Amino acid sequence: MTLDLAAFAKDKGIKYFMISYTDLFSGQRAKLVPAQAIAEMQEDGAGFAGFATWLDMTPAHPDLFAVPDASSVIQLPWKKDVAWVAADCMMNGELVAQAPRNVLKKLVRQAEGEGKRVKTGVEAEFFLITADGTKISDEYDTAEKPCYDQQAVMRRYDVITEICDYMLELGWGAYQNDHEDANGQFEMNWQFDDALKTADKHSFFKFMVKSIAEKHGLRATFMPKPFKGLTGNGCHCHISVWSNDGRTNVFADREAEFGLSSEGKHFLGGIMKHASSLAAITNPTVNSYKRINAPRTTSGATWSPNTVTWTGNNRTHMVRVPGPGRFELRLPDGAVNPYLLQAVIIAAGLDGLRNRADPGPHHDIDMYAQGHLVKNAPRLPLNLLDALRAYDEDEGLKQAIGSEFSEAYLKLKHQEWNAYCSHFTQWERDSTLDI
View 1 (cartoon, rainbow, N blue to C red):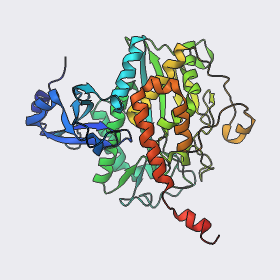
View 2: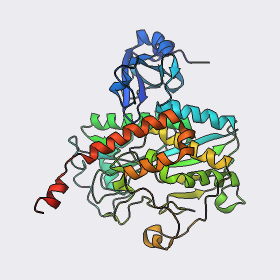
View 3: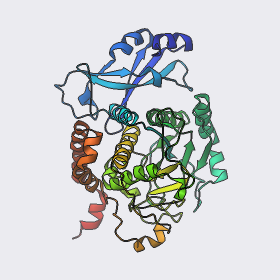
View 4: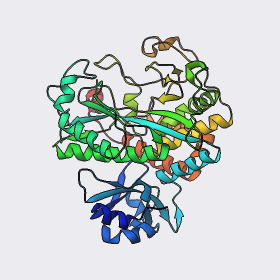
């Protein structure tokens, strides 16, 4: 039964709803709707001009309507009279095929049709920086190896615990928070869930972290590589597949190597097969490739992959299997679109299952020190253009995610790449002024 948002507002004391959707570039777009108007909005949606956001539309397109999905509604823990609700984009009475949440929902339905229920958890890393964005906010956070730094995390106790308290209040099952491997960097973890629910939570988490940071006079960034020499922001994703009733983890087989069943290995095989083209989605910005192809950081390791390899419980590879019944994809970064991340994982994994894809041999070496010994493993793209080209050549993946989405995404991302290439930088002046 669909939740009545007007009744929800009355029960919870909600004055305004943020009807929100995420565009192709991960921009979070919203309209603030008074509770008195939410009944009509729940039926017809809030109107937007799609061209004004990062969607492949023109000013001549008709109105885009963001229809709230009431099952996703969240009362803002830090502003109780406001509720956030994820929306599905529609135009002329039909779902907009290029809209990221619609893309994900289509793939979730496909998985369910094949008897599969994909569950995921994300590890969304972020930096707490100064309000002007120029440096980390804690002047005392200078350790060479700052990961899990007890004093540093306590100096940001007010920010981190406020966010964690809210996740606990929302029933997300928050279970740990830590200072990460870069100075000024943090990670907060909550329980895994169905792919769509994880995507909605991931989207809301980014909004919440930024909001609470601003409340404390700081700024939060999920940018993949905001500071040279420091570890970048990853968004590792833990993946498992269950039966449709959610009771049986079909990836789990304690008798198999690493506790990963044949179905788990075929799903992984799909990820490995499409890895280079996946990067166009999981690593979607110019800056992303400063993270996955980075030189050694001050802490001693980037914690990021650059080669398509997998392993057991070893963090130097693109995929690791940390325990029975799941694996961790370490490729995505902080810029990844919460909905497209889940969508591309499902698309690649289902392809692997359908075609019984072989993930290839695993490697148990330290890829940072001995990666040169691995032969025939593809390198990940060196830049966004290479990733876009790899995606464009992967007809199977493009069709699986959706041809309309793929066409729109590639068009806008190529425009972004061209804009980057036409931008003059200080490096060019430093390198070529006297030539």
